[in-house]
Length: 478
Figure 1 (tube, helix red, strand yellow):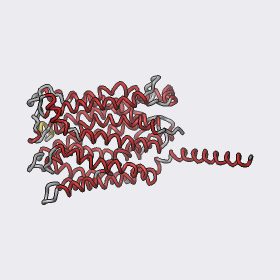
Figure 2 (cartoon, rainbow, N blue to C red):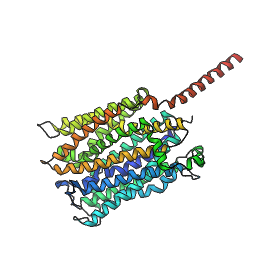
Figure 3 (cartoon, rainbow, N blue to C red):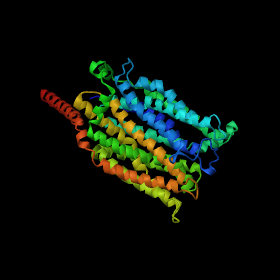
Figure 4 (cartoon, one colour):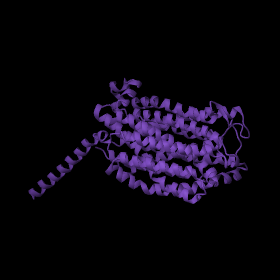
């Protein structure tokens, strides 16, 4: 069973840094840019109130983008699973979509009428979110499926998701500090806060594009995994048959369910972070950087801990811990600014509770999905890795769409200092979702899924035993 060296693992994982640079811009600032608090220094460029059934235009637009992303996941997965090319089936997709992925994520902020609410801005927002969703799928689905093919050993999967998580959080950390660049960029171009934000996002998107290209250009796909796609049985698989086969895995269905609940909760946290800081804690937006550094330092320090115990005690047990701590974090945020509690005390609780769940959720769901795909391939002899990540992405992106709609709708109950009920409701909902996710996770049978790895470990043991026997034979000959 092929094992990967450190260079190969890092070459693959650097793509996650690019994904983080690009997607974190939207996670942290898209809602803030188009739905700004009164004291943000940003003009309103789209409708701010409810447009349909208590839903906002921004929430509907973001939800539509993520819904399209989810709908295209199975299509791209089936295409990627059955695609044949001399240079591989996954990296070709990644090379061709990297520029569109980075560019469309940035262009959404360059509305045609930047100074006031205008229908053209709304058309621009919806159109760019839909286009960017397609490019996101074209890159990410082949990227995650590539890990299953180049890293057959379960321990390598854990290592690679560890690197992925560390690099993703590095990108998230850097983007969270970008608020400190808005004014310098604004002064440089002689503009306002909006101009500074857009120049900052353009620079971040450019760096992200470079990192997206590294695995696309330098990861070598296994020749055998590419050649097996020449099999008529593989090429003639129908899309819905592939989806049905994936859903026959009941543990994977369970994984998708709790991962969707986690996705809704984490989008509540990431989208709301700037509101928690500026409205509930009444701090400047630039405080997001130092807070993220504090969380990030502990998160990085916890990666070896999570990596070790995930291998020794099981990924499921670590996920249980993650859900509990994440629920405690949301509970702490919900009381920011209430009852005279010191801000530093509540922020300290957030710094204590947030890092380990962040590292767990960034590392383990991908590895667990890869385990489910590997177990299925071991049982059936068919490669459906792309479809596994696509189905998971489809359902969790529906969750992300729901999170966006819920978050922006809850903000209608109050998103300003002194009128913050909507923001507090998002934190309460986040805690409830974590508890629900924990209850679903308890039904996941990790022992059954990891049964595929017994053959690998038995082979390794036999090889070690063979080496020992050869050593004894050599000594006896002497």
